[in-house]
Image (cartoon, rainbow, N blue to C red; front, side):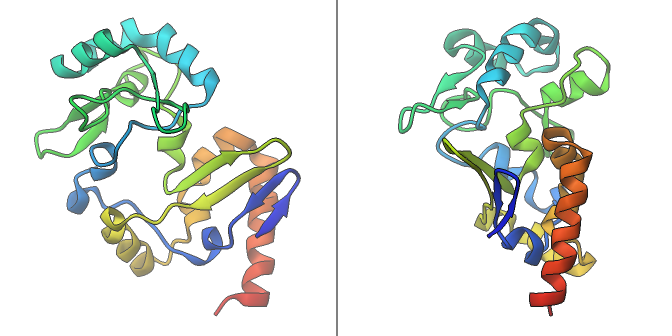
Length: 194
C-alpha cells in the first residue's frame, strides 16, 4: 500500500492495466451484481434533487423502479447507500444504446446539459473501489471476471489503472492529489516495476 495524506492506495492501481472495452462487455458492470452502484451520502441528496431532470432519459422500467423504491436505497447486507435496481438486475439509471451497450441515463442528461452532475463517483472511478474508514480512506482495485476484456485491452494499450481513471480521481480528490499519485507511481515503477 502507498499512503498519500489520509489515503491508502493499493499498489495494484499502479501495476494492473485496464481500459473499458464496451464493445465486448456491453457494460456488464451496470447489470451484474447483487446491488446497485455504491453512493456517498451526499450523492443521495443529489439524486433526489436531479431526478425530475434525469427522468426523461430513463427507460420506463427504470423510472418505475425509482418511483417505487426511491432515487437510492440501502444495501440490505451492510446498510450502505446504493442505486436502486430493476427487478434485481440492472441499475435503474441504466439505458441501452442500439447495440445493447449500457449507458448511464444520468450521464446522458449531464452531456445534454440537463443536470450539473455526471454520475455516481463509484461508477466513474471503476475499477477502483473506495472504502471510507474512521481515520483513513482505502483505494483498491476491484478485480471482476466480467472485466477481463478491459484488462486485456489495458494490457494491449499499456494503460495502468491510475491513468485510466485520471479524470474521476481528479474529480474526487483534486489535481494536487493526482499529481502526487503520479509521482508515487513513478517511484513505485522504479523500485518494483518490470
